Image (tube, rainbow, N blue to C red; front, side):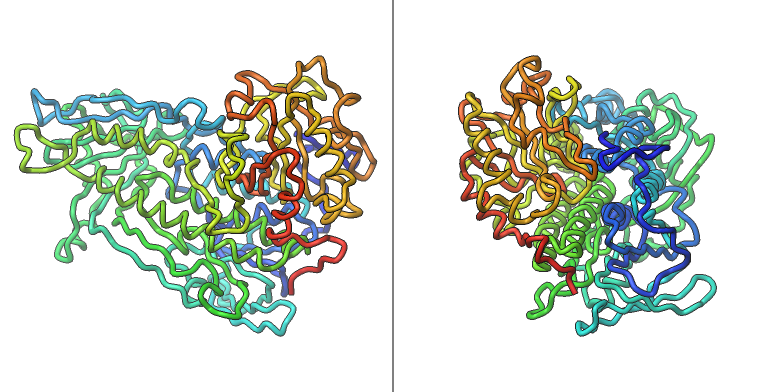
Length: 633
């Protein structure tokens, strides 16, 4: 963690100096109003909170923060994102690690009982530097609120306010007027905003206010979900388990944080209109009894039931993620995120994770536009990028949910259908990148923020459009081993990772051009600012650590910056354990330039000498020179 760049301040260094006194009550006008304090809304708010010049308010209908239940799986990709907010370490320490998935099937010698059929590593080696953990959604909210509270704006959540409706008048500086009602006071309030984010869940009122609709299917299959402290002789509850029984349904178990808590997803079977009411009225005791039948010969009882619910699986997606899609002549002002624009089952463990990526994608773009660093057209890429990702999630979720719910195949009765547990385990292994959250890719046909793969051979393991896949390096300035991707903080800046060519001639020339050359994006878009204010350049040298120091690296990799003009010793690296050049397929002779967006996705891979292509990319990526920029109106 780097701090004190602009001067020393006492206390927790993660608490950045406040830029204004704390406000009391809701303001009349804000730049961004976030409706709902779920994961998607809080990630967007935590991102916006980092920018002192941007005013944000978050409203929540509930009278207090979430305490129990709901989602719990934190994928590797989400922890990579949380690292950018400085939260990953705390979450990893607190969460339960998912190391293996165990698959159970009916015992061929006694099909009324189950036996363990397979063990599969949950996260493949070098898929991510982060583990897959389980942590209650309420605690995830707490961590994000903590990041907001430590940000310069000291952003909090205003509870007890219900969204009633909105109107839009583009002739005003704050075009969106939002009507609110106090809960339970009934007090009427109006807030005017430049932009609104609807993060208010599957029954989103914001979605309805902008005439967006969800379409898709309900699977007519019910599951009971419960968090319990079990008393059991089942041996594997500290692992993730997929259990198929003979005639009693399926069960998915997840180890929860703390070492004792377990979440059970219990198959309650097909739902018809005739029995929907009966299934929805099932109690925790009813569902636990079903779990007991599935787990035979093992027994289970609940010493304590912490949370319980019954739900039906539904997979739906909105026809647009903002108020402008498909409506000619309209710029987006109101956005929907998370469950407000896509719903799915919990079986893939991706709902909350994909929702948080919605918030991360949108947050940095709003900040760039509001600070005058980008044209408002940038905001059109939110729907263009995130809607295809949501559709991919739904397609995967349908297939995986059907497989989990399918009965175990009986080799003596193939006419009964079902799925073989070996097939289930093989499918899980095959889809490992997806369940880890690292398979998402922004395609160039969907977004101008993704370049072509014309130079992909220079870094075959850093795929254009996918998230930046970190690897170990050693920092030249202090000899510290670290992950290169952890240079990336949630501060709205783009990153350029320069992997040096064999003689460093190309890299040195690029550094000189970036620092002082005509057309350099640093000079064009950040004139008068710190050299790394818009584009943070980091370099990896093909040297031994002891052959490099601040005196013999390009000046751009040891710049003077910040209010005090201090030298930054954090920008030059050499390969660490495993050799990043080998791990990520980087051309040792030619090197590579890897351009990474503020949300950690790779925008372009280029030769180190491709300055014209770099200029062309920035020109089409909606950048605006800060000197002439103005906030969107």
